[in-house]
Length: 281
Ligand code: ATP
Ligand code: MG
Image (cartoon, rainbow, N blue to C red):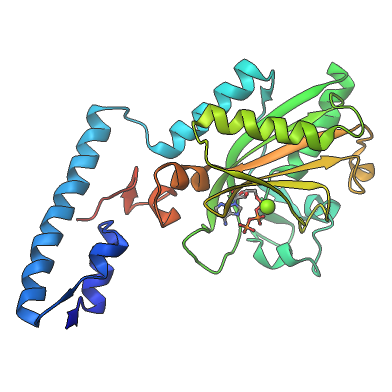
């Protein structure tokens, strides 16, 4: 029996063939080549159809639809205000998150020069911004940001070097002792807003926030969002003293799960894919 060659498997995978198609085997090479040609042609057509459907339909890629659904939920139903902060952040901001040279995340940081890096997370900016706003608005402060984050990852099917995080935080609205219940409620509402009903909520050890204070949302065993709460040992140096709850959603992870894609690249920033469809066909 003959399987598809490595190059053929690669090509079929790029064209979004599923595991079953890629794993097919054949009596001989001649039969295999015939099947490959046919399958390739069908897949090219399917990718083209998907790109026409985008142009003639929603006109917005799935990851932006996901982002919009969460933004609508937060602004229209939960009373959160959107903020816009720098993507390039000073080294000191990371240090204030205790991300120094001995921290696992430090290795993943992209440096612009020796004082500035591309943010690996939104938390430092949001800590800073919520303290400023608390002085003006009083409690509660409900803010969120959505935008690019950067981490050096050993390229897998679930990690991008540049991805989009939506981070929301509520300061001084939740009572001490009720943070975990509040996080669970937020997770349930977010997933309902996205129309995803098959997910799990699990407590986790976060590299930044330590154990027992985080709640992850998993879809098909993959983390799509992480929640955390305070008072927390990091809060003091940011001038934050009231209880808070926050969630970081991975927009591409959610898009990938929504579409049941196996590779996150299909929904990331890309010149090869648009809305999950292959461009260079
Ligand atoms: P993982 O353990 O899966 O690498 P994490 O726990 O390090 O993720 P968090 O810091 O909790 O990630 O970030 C919040 C969310 O951002 C994650 O739940 C995930 O959905 C998303 N995310 C984190 N890193 C990446 C990445 N490299 N590519 C795409 N999405 C990511
Ligand atoms: Mg996490």
